[in-house]
Image (cartoon, rainbow, N blue to C red; front, side):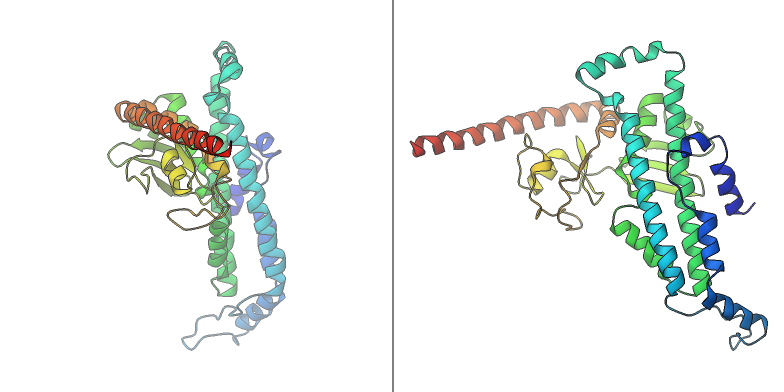
Amino acid sequence: MKFGETFMEYLHGEQEQFLGTCSHVEYKRLKQVLKRCRTCKSLHQACDAGQGEEADGTPRLCRCEGCPVCDQMFFSELMKEASEIAGCFNTRVRHLLHLLVATGIQRYIQCFRPCFKGDRQVLLEEGKMLMEYVAMNTIAIRKILKKYDKVHGSVNGEHFRSKLRAEHIELLQSPWLIELGAFYLNFRGLDAEECAECSTHFSFHFDETKFALIMSLAGSIKLEYDLTCAICLDIVFNPYALGCGHLFCKSCACSAASVMICEGLKVASEDAKCPVCREAGVYGNSVHMSVLNLLLKKRCKDYWEERSSAEREEMMKQSKEFWDRQTKYMIGYF
């Protein structure tokens, strides 16, 4: 079965109610845009008449660097859809994971959640649909961009994929996808072998030998997220994902941004750059990977406790130095 038919079945399948509140790639309509391209159509007619062949006799595809019709309707529409899909996915995952790491009164409410029949299964089904949502839309974007390059004989589609990554709306780059994988491992409490059988659509496991979260999604999409901090070169502790997608320990990221741990990354200067890619302004929209942190706490207990103790000591040291400076300033002022 062609992917277009598979994608339409997905949109009108069991997930239809879920998808009613989420955006998705308009795969069929975007393909129609390419079919209606007059420049490409005229060239294909020439090929059919034997006037558009290469020296070796193979049909000549369109060699234009860009088609105004396709560029205006195709890329702008696809960029809008990709942004909406990423936003919808991030919001739904954030809502799903909210009570898992809740505190205060929300934690108290969470204690009563298992009393409700089927609540656990509902959360797992929601996570499953979100995983499939990522996989199907990622494949759709890849397929339609590949089709664009084939029709136009260009690499503009590949360049567009790079643009999605540069603007951080590539679904597979989303830190919330890592959080969703960690959610399944935490919620189910499965080991690697059991996780591999939890769904026919995706599988994942935590590789403790090289500290990586490995996911396999539909369409032969395999992802490996390295959980090593690029600053301390150890497994991330209390991890944060910066706006560019790179993972760091909170203490390491605060050090790189020249802020105290107790202040947090949100107060970092707009000029502060990521230690890896050197992109500026990535600290203000950083994401606390609380579910991943919970997974590491369970899987690496000794290491986690050691780092937790060290971070508390560092916070106390920084706080003492801060208040000492404030006291000296006030004494000098008076």
